[in-house]
Image (tube, rainbow, N blue to C red; front, top):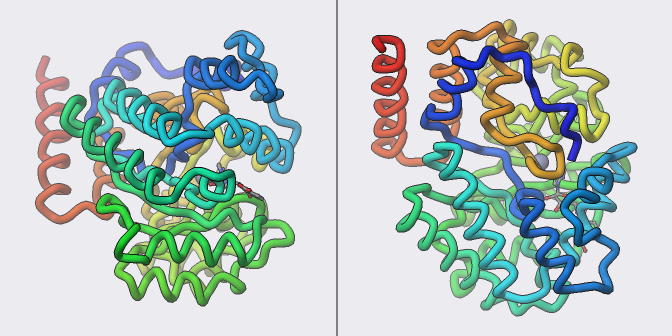
Length: 353
Ligand SMILES: Nc1ncnc2c1ncn2[C@@H]1O[C@H](CCC(=O)c2cccc(C(=O)O)c2)[C@@H](O)[C@H]1O
Ligand SMILES: [Zn+2]
């Protein structure tokens, strides 16, 4: 948990505006959203784990030397989730935290393979996330949807298993809307996953792979060409290829930008070097997201504050950014219109006050 990353530069009133702004979150990982309280509770329950049970010690534990180290630590947290009740608790608490930040709609990236291969029954896993989704919507008013992602480094066995879980009518959860690909990119070429994405897309899911987070723009091209990506997770290195930027702009392919994540995993050196502004300048649709917020010492509100600074946004600019995420989401048109109207009404009343 890298506290020093928290953006303290945004003026206090802009932070207050962001805190109550209705938002959508499109790139946030299920296990990566476990709060320090939940992580330490689970670590205390499972003392054989090397994850510290003391929330204070988590801050050091969540300081990463590079992307590979991040994935290693991430998997140690995955190892703490051992029962369907752990899955339900985690999911419900993520819903609570999103609601606290006025997130009205979130697409949560879930990696079912990591849980089923650790022995959690697949039916019980689906029931746990669905039960938590319904409870979060009823109790907090936040709508959750799922993106099932293949952990790329785990290979084609993981791809097959994830595709089966996402497309089998007897298992596939009602809240599932999209299909993704996460984990390291180096040594994990995207084209090998084409047959799995083909099956998921044929089953009506949207394609949202990570690409260009830790490798160059050619990976983003691969995600577009072979995986038929409709949005790109991160896409950071797209900034190095003007033709790619033009393609993303022309075809209205949004990037799910997660600025603090890119610093914490050392994919980008400093926030000031982050290419967010170049994406906007090139006309690429951008959304701002939190990725694995407690692990990166951030939350969605903080990512909006970071974006306000990098893009020099005022309240209206921040409202547009929030509407970008709604527009880029897989909500139906009526749902999108409802949240966008809420954003407009909130912004007008804030500016009139
Ligand atoms: N910023 C991120 N960028 C990319 N991915 C991210 C990001 N944040 C979180 N993730 C998650 O990291 C996991 C990686 C897990 C993985 O590769 C793996 C390898 C071998 C075995 C197993 C297993 O479970 O047995 C898992 C993925 O599940 C993905 O959802
Ligand atoms: Zn991610």
